[in-house]
Image 1 (cartoon, rainbow, N blue to C red):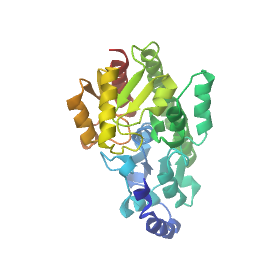
Image 2 (tube, helix red, strand yellow):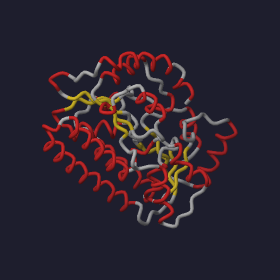
Image 3 (tube, rainbow, N blue to C red):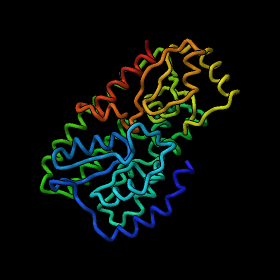
Image 4 (tube, rainbow, N blue to C red):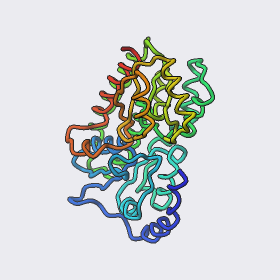
Length: 312
């Protein structure tokens, strides 16, 4: 991820310069909000309703591991009413962007109260043993937004922030928030149901994005290209194919924004069938055109995929 920081110094200078110019709301007096991952964008839209205008800082289809913000994108964030990201620990790039916004009222660390030790504590409470790789996941895996429990914390943070910034519409925000939490609880329950007594204990996926879900619901993940979607060597490819064939896994999950020649090789050299999994980092270009898409709809599809991978 070093490339992400390459041009950040110049951008920071620019943003520091304009930080004193004040933030501007979107058209029609709606709060202009930028979010990082898609769930936070979706939560802000659902809780804010007609009072907000929300966009992601990431272009559609982007692989976050290779993303580097442009000066224009950085300037847009700096001029908005609110910038939402996960936490300083899990999102160092957004931490850098956030540090250029001097007014705390214009930024939100959505899960600052849900830190790494909380997540690790969850695993130990259940007396489960995890290998070294799994225990490291919370220190380096940014995909916290796949965990419904963490998302309840994020949704509350977003609701509280909107109420603080726009108390005149508190009733709307509170009602929308309650409806959202009810649906997140439903997603949590469905994930518990499909992982209660699974037929298989391991999910194979294009890259290591399932760490939080796997830890929360007690299954294992094997990523084809690792945490940062690195291209493996020829030797590693052969080892991956060998492991998949030995495991006799009937399915491999492929993500909407992770493309790799490796996954094509695996499809050809193994008997495993491909299943679509949405890591919720960003929407694809086609998904952006859909009007009925949401965090909930994408997670419902993901639950069906995980159910098939673990139980069918």
